[in-house]
Image (cartoon, rainbow, N blue to C red; front, side):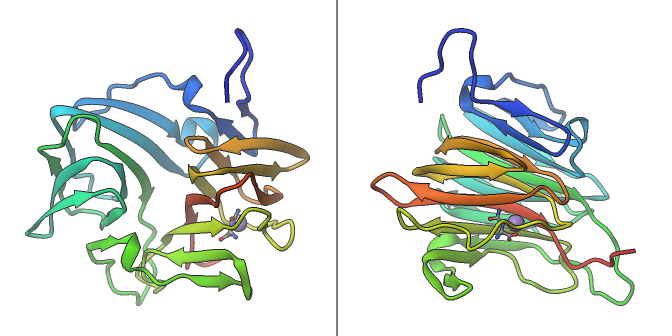
Length: 247
Ligand code: UGY
Ligand code: MN
């Protein structure tokens, strides 16, 4: 959507935020070179996780090695080589990976213009739970299920839903007119990027037109609802904190 000079669809508030691609400003992040890095969401916004968009130049590299931080990556476009847990994989769009806290994850040899969306979360230990393991996958091979029985809202769960994992990353695909069945209010946070299509997102008491490339932060208990609009399906990739004690 065109932005009028001096205007923006973006909003940043205490419990939710919307950023459009027109708002992006680069950051230099240690470990990432030969790339444009946008820190879309992090603790400065009020979130307990970080969401970063990295667009690589030829020869760019990203190395994550923080002892307490887990990193999930999703290739939005392009091609890059992933080295993690002793395995090397060439990743293309739709591939995703999860690197547990304390392990090194290295992205090299990107095609110019390769875009990777990252979600990072400090790992929260859970007594008795095994440590999370490295994951590599392809969204095309993840079976979707109709959300609460509605075939117009299809949910793909990319990471294992097990006590070892305290974060989830899912893809929601909506047929035009498909929508969340009710206004959700929950303790879990979300970080979200619109992958395809368009629609209207309700966040607290505001309704926002959104389209591919937009990013949303929903803090705990942010009332949220979405309806897909237009002539093609809408899809979004989103993060959620899961599987840990309430107190
Ligand atoms: O998993 C979820 O909470 C999801 N239904 N929320 C959302 O799409 N905003
Ligand atoms: Mn939700």
